Length: 89
Image (cartoon, rainbow, N blue to C red):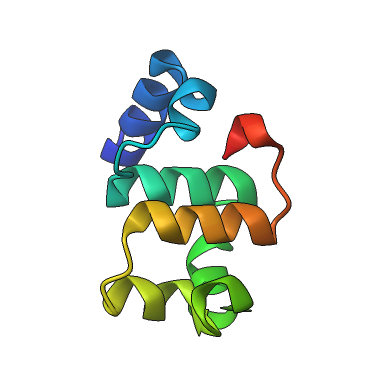
């Protein structure tokens, strides 16, 4: 099992939905697991590179992360943009 697959199992076993709404920081690895869960592993990185979000001051996910925006704030912007249900945020 790859590291990412193992991480996915750990996130699911730990209760992904419960952790998603917390105020705890989102680790970058958890962020990418969530992105891949909602957008698919083949599309998540492309989406993060190409899609400009008003919620991130008209930056892409990649630009916001590189600019020092907290991962949890980037995830909240992505979740809002994708109109994810509250339990998945």
